[in-house]
Image 1 (tube, one colour):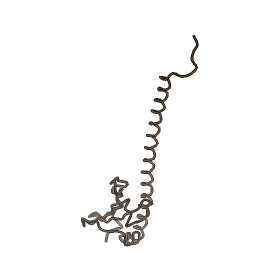
Image 2 (cartoon, rainbow, N blue to C red):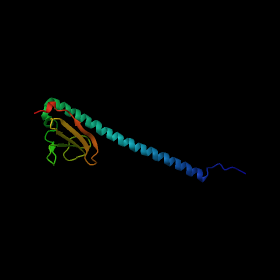
Image 3 (cartoon, rainbow, N blue to C red):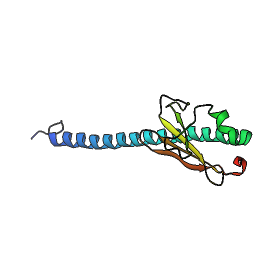
Image 4 (cartoon, one colour):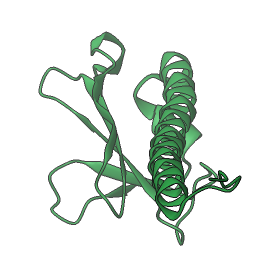
Length: 138
């Protein structure tokens, strides 16, 4: 009896199934890594912005926001003393493209608190970063 030199249908199906499983695993890993890199980029960009705010608050004390944001900072709609500033996807101040929201307020002890979140998904990027209060006393 002669042996056939080709693969049987079962062998081909097993090979295709193994390839599909490995491909799905690699694609899933790629998507997870891509999402992690995007979140890390958001965090790093806003960390730079927060360092700028720290520099401006050292230099201009309680008026730092007038020099840093200009007239773009607005009180939130609730009127509870929280200021909001919006950034676009390129991390530039924007009044039209509101991709990210930076909120800041002062506590009763004159501490500056800053939070940043993605405006559509409400995903928190920086949560209540406390700058302390010594330099913000009126």
